[in-house]
Image 1 (cartoon, one colour):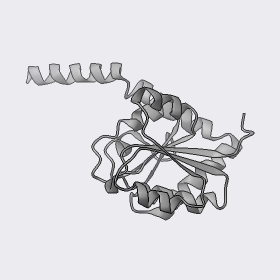
Image 2 (tube, helix red, strand yellow; image 1 turned 60 degrees about the horizontal axis):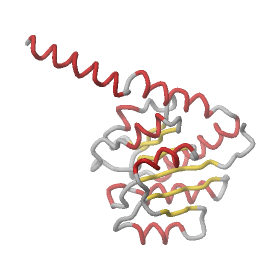
Image 3 (spheres, one colour; image 1 turned 90 degrees about the horizontal axis):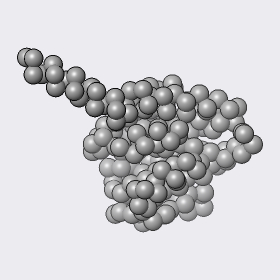
Image 4 (cartoon, rainbow, N blue to C red; image 1 turned 180 degrees about the horizontal axis):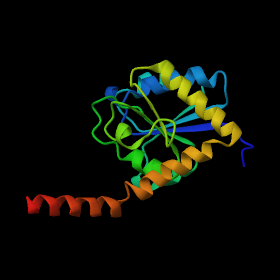
Length: 185
């Protein structure tokens, strides 16, 4: 199962400055010079030209935006999902979807859902949104985990987090519990 040691990394969204995709591309460029990796970016936006220039000469593939119903299919063919946004991101629902597809989530401490959903090193990885070197080290760590097959534990834990804690059913139960508690007050 671990014959292909190419780490496939995915980012999906609007290419805006506060999404900090440039940090992801820089970290990826450094790591991909040492290890077999591919980065797929889906989206458009004001930062697109900058990202195209940063990507030159590296295995970075820029794609047009895709309909939401196709995002999950793309997620299934990649290993890692990166939520690279700074504090300008609200929740970042794509992270939930990626974890539900068994991807390894990597997110910033600053983005809404990342620090809430990711337990660093257990079900994903966290980094500071401006820190290229920190993200570079995480990508290399995940590559090594994939090479040895140990990435499956992180994937399993990410999926378990979604299914046991963050599923729509569990969220509805929690909301009802909160509403009942509020009514009693």
